[in-house]
Length: 228
Image: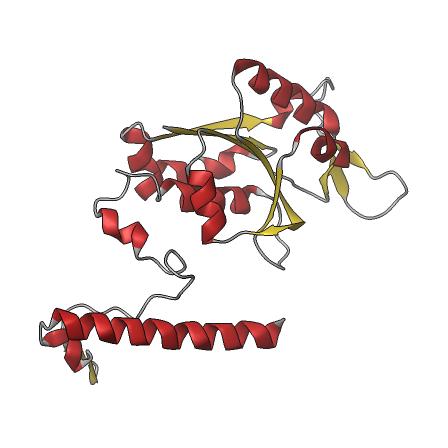
């Protein structure tokens, strides 16, 4: 079993995603558990304030250190954590290799930033891993947190019905993009499924898939090099 503890200013954000599809199945199978902690429950302010203006001036509010410190200390007194993650633009770019590494952990804590960000003393004191989900600006760290949870949980043996599904996903093997996939009907809107997939020759099908995977990967690499 893998356990996720998420610290957030907007706990309701997680209600539906964690009770849907694969994440719900993993929980029902007792293969994963999710604990969402409302930072306001750890505020020492009578108004439950968890943010304040930045020192030095500037636009935007910053999440205060106290709620994080209090919540993290409480959780760490109850168990050891293999990783305490903060999603941050300056962190390591998240990829499938890192997802696999995290899937081998037992207890993972994720700190979700919001507004302008989190008081940096939280990162200095507790964080073991900084992760970036790309050069994009989001309202908060809740979406990256869900992305991490989803990508990790689906790798846990027994979560997916077909154990090969996760093993053959894009980036899982050789950092390649998957080949295109098709289903019935064999022809739709004037577009046909590649003939090789209809003949049942598994050796030829595997060869075609490998060629298509390599082609799509080269195109993907070219596109992303151009954008860097």
